[in-house]
Image (cartoon, rainbow, N blue to C red; front, side):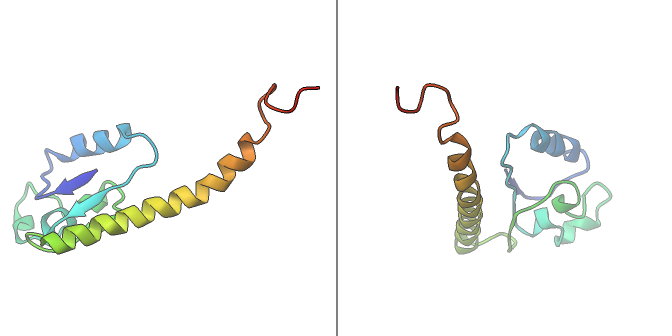
Length: 108
C-alpha cells in the first residue's frame, strides 16, 4: 500500500481497515513528509502526526514533494525487502512440499 499526502483523522479508519483487509505479506510505503508526519500542515486539528502511528510502515520516501529519484529509491528498497522475505520463505516451502503428497513418489 502506498500512502501519499496528508492523512486526516477522517481517513485513518479507512486506511487501517484497508491494511487489515490486505492479504499477507503486507507492505506499506509512506510517500512524502505529509504521510510520515514531518509536514507543516500537521498543525491542523484534523491531521494525524504520521501514518506509522496506526499501521506499520516498511519504507519511507522523504521529500515534500518527493523527487522521482527518492521515489525510485524507495521502490527499490521495497523490492529488496520483498526479495529477502521470499528468500527466507522459499527453503521452508521446498522442505515442506518435498514428497508430502501421497502418490507423488516413485510407484512400486
